[in-house]
Image (cartoon, rainbow, N blue to C red; front, side, top):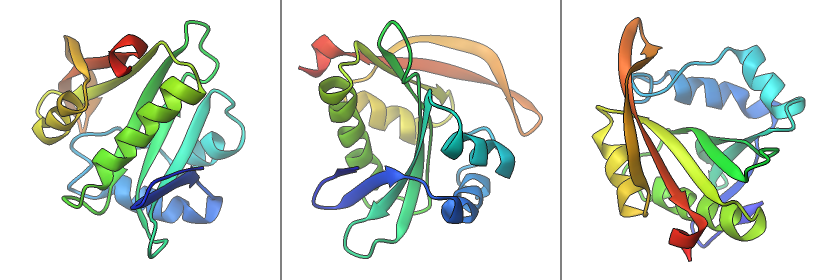
Length: 165
């Protein structure tokens, strides 16, 4: 469990998957992230030891405001991926707070060497957030994924432990 004065991040419960699916499929999120089936989300919360499925809660109300998937827990090179981020509550600082807590966890508790994320090239809001939090662009993968029947280019962004310190 990760928390600060605003948010609480913990493992997602199966009963919260309806919220996760709704947030993932929301028109403000779906142009930027891959969609998973309910079965894929269930597998992620129950059987995948390499992946963390986390829910982000407003600390005061304990209401879900987003979720995040973390991949690479068993990576031999200590490279952890923020696989997916989606928020139902935008513009309130939850995303920045979540990112700060995940960075701290990855580099201090997990002793990661590298924390990385992919961002669709037209998701300027997310890209700006990641850059402002110290992530560096490593490159652009042209038309690397198919979202909503369209090929999308994605930026690979990362932060190294030496940059976090």
